[in-house]
Image (cartoon, rainbow, N blue to C red; front, side):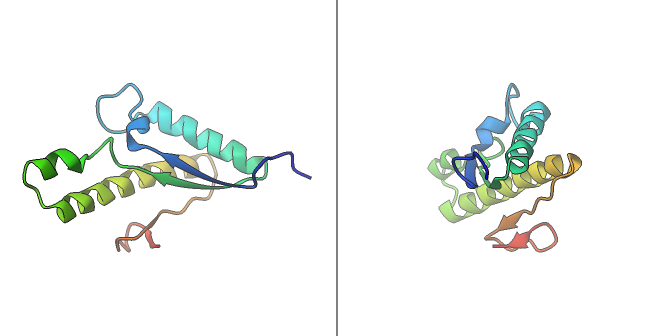
Length: 114
């Protein structure tokens, strides 16, 4: 019997958290550490799902205030989220874990439909 308090974990990771010490983008140290921690949870018996934000790449609020269409800004943010998810998938797979990226926007060559 597992000593886990929860067998299923949904972890929300802000895109900004992926920046680490960087000014923009993804700090490899951060994403690799997160991947190792996810794998440790899986090895302990947990099922882990990640929801990753895109704020390290794109923040639509400022552009919307400057006149950009809100829907366009939201779509750009969703693409930034997919970029981060692909980076996380890569980090997990390099450590031997299985990972899938799913998105509500259709990008069939890049990720699965949600």
